[in-house]
Image (cartoon, rainbow, N blue to C red):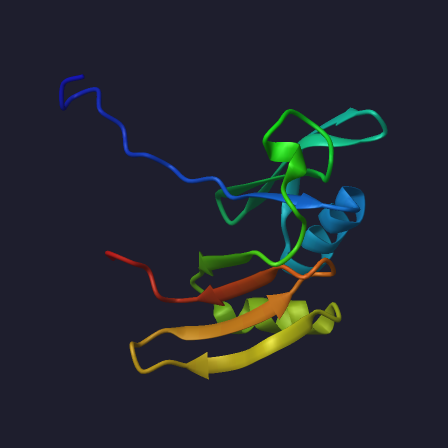
Length: 133
């Protein structure tokens, strides 16, 4: 592949939830995600895509889909999301009743951060730090 057609790799986080429908509702109400696509099978969500400030998050119901993905455990994941307005997002999440596990903090490396735990135990860390930026 020559330099003119080479693209930059993109990473799309993918989470599994015991209750994927409830997770989507929480992500929409608490963080402002927007539902893009939801595919169902066997009574659950095989694949869903949500948009958050231009980024894409994928999720599914635990135990569905193909191996080895369907055997992954739920919860206990950490996602870091760089945002322009952590204060506004913090206020939105707190007002929605999110479990704020790290209050707004100014770090020694120049980021303004906070973190919430979703209902199934994943940690969502938000801050202004952008690696390589």
